[in-house]
Image (cartoon, rainbow, N blue to C red; front, top):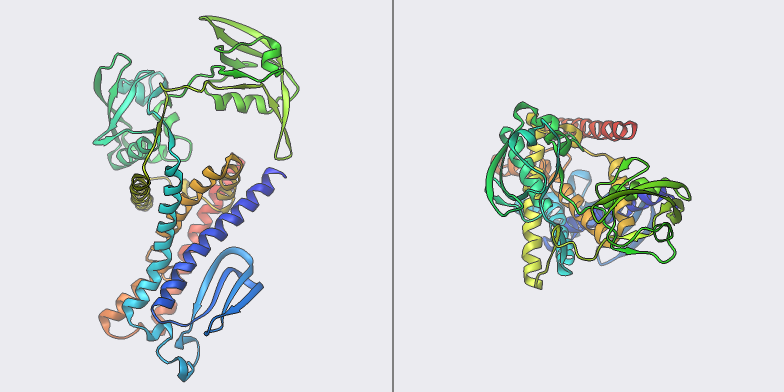
Length: 450
């Protein structure tokens, strides 16, 4: 199965799961509130499969276009209501009940993220310690005094527990005023303060893939040291040994294991020159790579793995079930706040709108995470679920947030908004979403074209 097919299937699976969660929130709270549900559909368009159940004869559908879904409630604005159903239409229920139903969709997306992270944290997580790798001469990081091997202890007032939380804190500080205050610890254990000052360059550095190149330092990661050799593999046959550190392949530097995999992947069955160090002595050796089949694609194989112990770079975090739940709720909350901040900064121009991803990019990431394993895919679902929850709370008329605004206005003025005002609002909402989708598709195409 090719990568494009895997990405498409993973994208459809992700959207279907998250939409089902979102719409189930509307559905179940609507039923609890006494509303009559006419249809619960995953997907849009003509139903492919329909099941009718319950005393209300609700239709449960899977439809042809798997890019969304909806719950259809009985509503007197769409037609006459049978006397037997009087008071069960959406617009006949009390306004607080309507608002609760509208809030339930995003709320269930956040709840899904909490549960997903709870599962992931329950098995313990490997975390990469925040440390500084190579520093580019005369860069922002170099002028701030960062050095190779420095450990990042804190970013501002935020403790740097791992690279994920550290990255969020760096971005938060940078987009606020262009300054990133750091507490660093050198290899001798001495702590010092440093400030990376990017000034007005902060918006450019928020473009995808530019942050660390722009700041001028790399994430400190374990060197490519051979921890084990596959029996009869290419590396063992060529004479490489456990403990050797691979420096480059055919002249391309391999600072991390991912670098090595990327270089080797495109050279199946080819002879390559590998530069390595052994006992502080550098040498070069020719190696004929093997091959492996990954998703129907032939890739090069060197036949090595990293050491099992990399405590200088990684550490394992373990939790009790209750601690896992607390960590999951905390991570969901901080991710939600970060997403809101970034959206707000995009509006003010402090964050690049190139960060808006469309279905192509999301599909590619979905495919990559699915191929890496169930845990990675579940983490991806959690992130997208949070984004979906935040997006639906925006005060845009055709989204949940906009509908909540309508209900609040009705509560204040004592009567519904006029049809003309609602139609105008819908038109504004559609225009806003089309504009957002245009940016997303443009960014996707720009990424593909490089």
